[in-house]
Image (cartoon, rainbow, N blue to C red; front, top):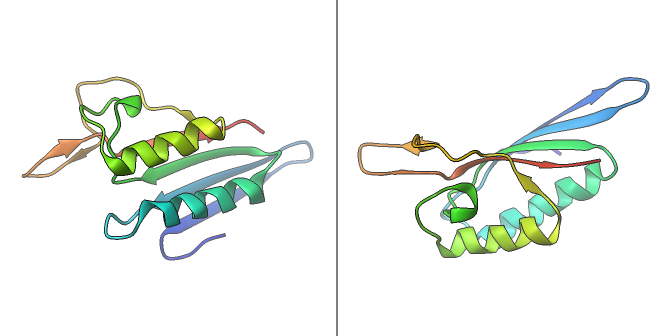
Length: 113
């Protein structure tokens, strides 16, 4: 499951299988391709615990950003349709900050097994 934009770790015990994945959604790429890759991760891990840290470059009020953009709306629709939970909490601290801007584009999302 790992590639240049995704790293996956499987943790197993006798009773439990759990996956942790880190993903990068390049803002120069159509987010629909990244969403398809996220769907593949979900298919592979189906029935097991899953938590994903994603640099989404997608802005949406659902994860406490100040604005919505097209990328954020597409990702929001996918998350809602697939019962994926955004674990980000409302805070006055952005998840991304540079000299030019700040936003909440880094997400922690989870799917129950």
